[in-house]
Image (cartoon, rainbow, N blue to C red; front, side, top):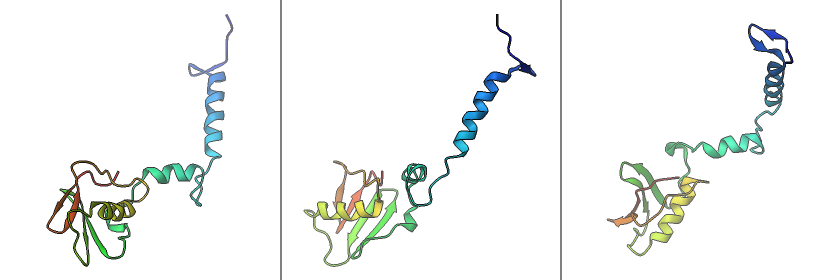
Length: 117
């Protein structure tokens, strides 16, 4: 049986491997340009609703009912769900809107209950 040097009961050979992996991980900084490691982290973090840019000519709000979008002039009609969805897609960003059969029209607004992805 091969004996390895131990330190307080830990196998020193294994500890060396663990420290090598940790040291290599520290060498990969998050990129401020939005590429590499920084981009992966950035993609998982959604912008808070109050910081999102609303496309011109629309009003968009997050509510308990979902994301509500209205158009300045003229108000949306019940056949204009595609335009409303495009506005909300732009507002939600890279994840987009969770659109589906539960989306509905009410009083000149389109409501997307799934919110942003």
